Image (cartoon, rainbow, N blue to C red; front, side, top):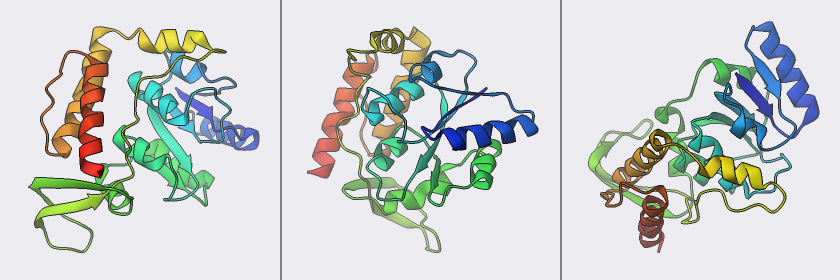
Length: 219
């Protein structure tokens, strides 16, 4: 089921009508914990315009913890949220001008890494890749490449919210399988950066290890 949570009422309504025409199950969310808690949800169409209590990057982390596929509507490639989205494996990113056709195309056709590789090259900050051949658009393979990213060492599990304590409780109480999947994702990021993950039992510990690596790379 697709949950619509763009923070733009008109857009949510138009998307709902279009998804209904395509016989794709969907619902409009009116509060932040619904896309996280709804077990039938497997996809969320989201934008930073939503009114939520958590930092947006933490909300993205919460959705990915629950294995939600996120279609993210961003203004442009300089958005402060782009680096976090890419770090969390969110590749379905749509920039302005956002159109109904673009969104429906992403609903039906998930983006691949090759679709967003250019975004890494255009970000700020430096992340080095070595040991693998990187093929840039219209370029020959190279043995080593340095690409840019805006990823900052601040991605952490959802923090405590005074007004919505239940969302924090429900997000943190993930089962072992969910934790293992989260650790696998972090381990993949570490390998991408050329490091080996040492802490493989605890999500928070793995995140701290990734945070330290990012600090070293950016500094």
